[in-house]
Image (tube, rainbow, N blue to C red; front, side):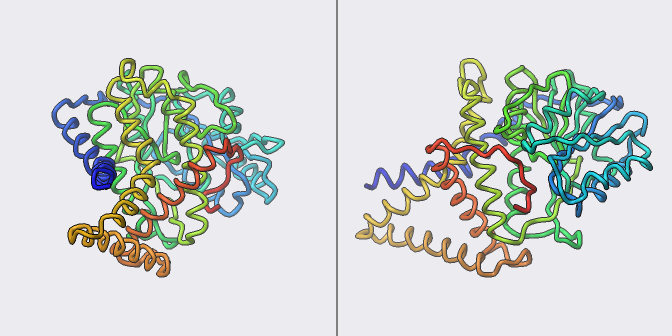
Length: 380
């Protein structure tokens, strides 16, 4: 049982500390600089929307205000059979928009991935920009993104997502802390090769290498993997900033995390050839370490707790159990607090536990063969 405890403990240390440290080492020891350019290609912004009447006007006006030549910009909103007036808002704004703006209605409702597949053939831009219906960009975000396409080896670029309160102020909760950790890891991965995961709300790619996906596939995960499979890099641009409101309701955040985790597991299954190190080298190790093991981290978390219970005769293991219990008590307090302004001492354990519990449910659904095809807004 001692060996089992240390196996699970060391695996957790590798997932959350060991792999990031190795990624940082590679970023400094074998960097691959990106040859950025100031050239401005034509860009098509694609936004899938289902009942986004509360958000869509602010989002569209945000894109109209981007620091980018209007003649080199177009926006296509794909309404996934919206019923709340989203379509009428888009059509009204199209009449006054300084950029080319049009609506495509998808009917019957088929989800975000099918919506993107429908719109891409209609896009005239050399670069596709994927923007969520509630995503607000910094004015220079697009210029920052497209500069990376000056490097012919770059096929996909993702920016930095910042979570804010409804009043626009930055939050300090577990969700925001988690994203800071992810963004730092992405910056290291980008420095030596390709990143493994993207945000999905501030992403751009070359239109020529877009590949249609099945409706049940997660575009934020599958499309970047397809780009890597074609031999291009997927890189992180921290200066391209997106703001989204954080979720303060545990139930909605949890359901969103289950959906994302389930579709990510299916994406890795669909693209499982990328796990072959003989063909994909370092990226196979990255995909295993950063994504698969991370999504399955609930297994060693349960394992280290259960094996610890069988080792209580030794004082050291009483201490390790006490540390684990204190962590989960803090997570419970974070859940009860339920505020974006709560201290990190409770919100970080809470969010860590929420994510791993969601991954456990998603893994069980994956084993049962369940899939989620219909896209839903992030608020659940």
